[in-house]
Image (cartoon, rainbow, N blue to C red; front, side, top):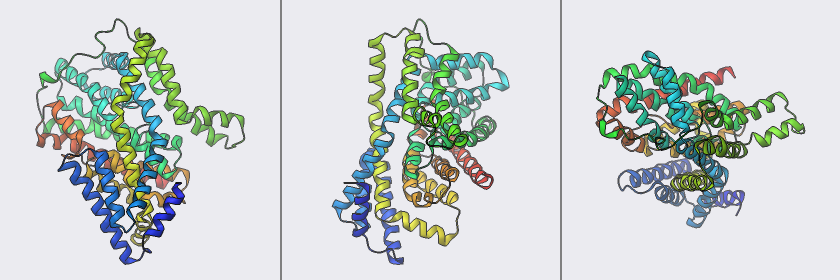
Length: 465
């Protein structure tokens, strides 16, 4: 069944959108989100199952027959996984190659050898931002926290002064920059241009990470002064290797997909002729799948072979990289199913009507919706996917740049105030040896700073571009 047929069936199942219809849909949305929140937070149910149940609840309460709600959810799940599943898998492979080969350690050691004193927080931001490009947030934390702890311990630095910049770099990459799952799904849902979104995302990310990282870390270090937890300093992942790839070639490999995608965007702007051979070539090599695939293939030689990996070790690395992302793919897919259910029952049209009545700028509305879902569910990815589904109608008549800014507004809102219903909150708390209050004063406030600063920058860009 095609998406169009699902939308038609769902539209037939729902009453015309009147004031009473708006009220019913509003209650259905709140109930669906409440079910997801309760199942995740209270009953500790996996987010995939919670999103599936919440989507069916939403469809039933909105007035759609259950079989139509199931069809909408299945259609959304399938199209989302088809759109981003391969990209997530390729990103996971590249990240695993980077970690296992010692390439990540090489980047870290080289930058730290050049930095010291007041430059150290800036070095940590740089490290986290580069490492965070191909890695999932959780993987980045696991990879970088040991380095943060060792730097703070050996250099006698404040843990927050070193740790907050690293966390800010990872979080900004996760929320704003593709090929991370949230931005990719939002780009797909809003039919935004990936290259333009990437370019504008970097433009927003740089000042955001500076303010939320090195600048905010000064205050965080005053508010929370804790010793480095000795038990959390593990061995370096590459200590067992006899050799590892060089700094320059590692950075080049990590940045290759970004460069290819940016080159495509630049050629599209400069040439602007779909029939031109140069533009057609860059449309292929700069597509996300080809760009990431090229980085993985190059990484086999520049990272894997450079570390002495044979064919069996490379095959093992690829195999091990794919297992952990099964849950991520299911959550992202279910989030896409929830998004499609929202669209098919008419919630997108309701949001469009409300936005016209309220005279709220579309970018601000998108940010606020993402903030609300983030606070409720604790998941930046779920917030991004759901908000993208809700505001998708607003992107229909937007220019290419404003559609990209809409993606970034959603991404910024999805990072707002991480608290106890967010897995990242507990990850940071445990790694840094903090109590809940200390985690809120540092990590939660940092996430809020990122969200507000990035959201403000997106609004400012919309006035200029």
